[in-house]
Image 1: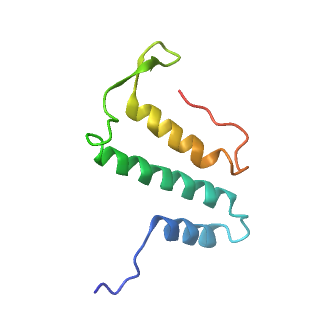
Image 2: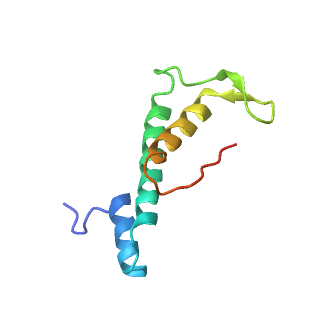
Length: 95
């Protein structure tokens, strides 16, 4: 059994906030945690990509006229949905 405490991304973010900015409100901490959670969800789907039909091109194009990839659309949707209701952001931009 390891003697050191298990360091999760949430623990790291919270400890970094306490050490560097004890007067912080926690808004940035919550935003970073939401982004980290989004990354975990995207990583999970990436490992299952062949099973959940998330590989390949979608039938849409981006603002540059390029064919969009299903995984790009999925990742964009996850990050947007993770942050759209929090009130911590006034604008979100994507490619």
